Length: 227
Image (tube, rainbow, N blue to C red; front, side, top):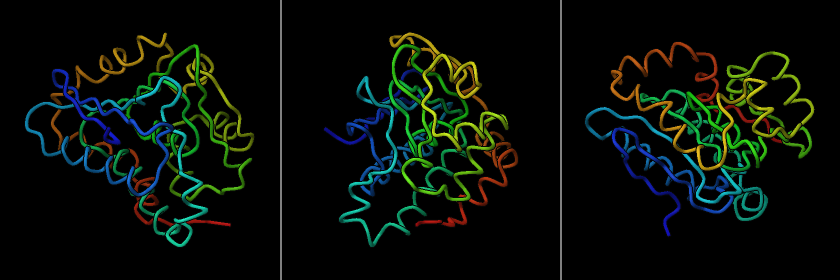
C-alpha cells in the first residue's frame, strides 16, 4: 500500500494519508508533496480534501522515533522541510479542507490548520498541540500559522496548556468549522470546497498569500528552535 492515495470525485481531489498515524518523516513528506504536485498540474476546476486512512488518526505529527534515531543528524533540515510543506498547504492555490477523522496532534494539527476549512469527527479523536508537554518549542513559522487561525484566547490556551479537545469543543472554540458524525466527515469536507473548485487558481493563491503573508514568510524562512 502506498503512503498516500489520491483520487478525484467530481472536481474534488481526495488525498488519503495511509501510513498508520501518518507521522512526518522524509518519505511521508515527499509523498505528500508529490500528491500536491499532481493536483497543481491537473487541468480544470479543482479542490482538495485530506483525510486519514484509519478511523483513529488524521495525523500525529512528527515521527519522533525517526527524529531521535536515524534522523537525528537530519533534524534541523528536515524541520525546515516540514515548515515549507506547511507553508505550501497554507498558500495552496485551490480550496482545501481537512477531514479530521481521528487524532490530529502537534504538526498533524498544524497541517489541519493550514487548510482553508476543517471538518472534525464529533464523537472520537482529539485535536492537540502538545509541544509544551513534550518539550519541543514551536518554530516561529508554526506559531504564526497557528496564531492566524485561532482567536487570541484559544491560541493562548492551546499552546500554553497542551489541552486535548474533541470535535464538539473544537467547533465551539472555532478551531474547526464543523463537528459531525464519523460517516459525515468526508462528505461535509467535500461539500465545503466543491462549490469553490472553479475559482481562478492564480487569484485564489494570491489572496491566500496576502492573507497569511507574515506566517508564510516565517515558514519559508525556516527558522528552527530546537532544544
